Amino acid sequence: MLLLANPRAKGEVVNIGNDEEVTILELARLIRELTGSRSEVVFKPPRPDDPRRLKPDISKAYALSRCC
Image 1 (spheres, helix red, strand yellow):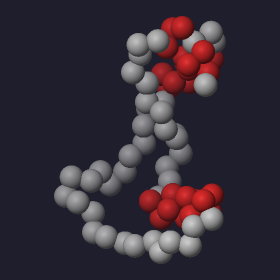
Image 2 (tube, rainbow, N blue to C red):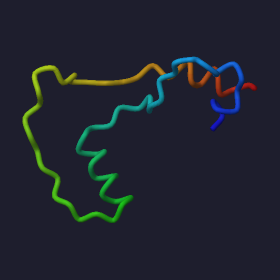
Image 3 (cartoon, rainbow, N blue to C red):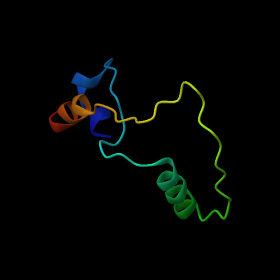
């Protein structure tokens, strides 16, 4: 919401994410908890092009959300 309110962010490409690493299993469990789902978590082998780790650089988002 802060990015939407900042005129300097208009037209900018900004990574949105979390700077703390979370495993896919942790994410699946969180989604199940938040939605009240009882769906089974199914494990499948990774695709060859799947990154082993992903941590977005969200420094631009922080900088643009600090002031308007």
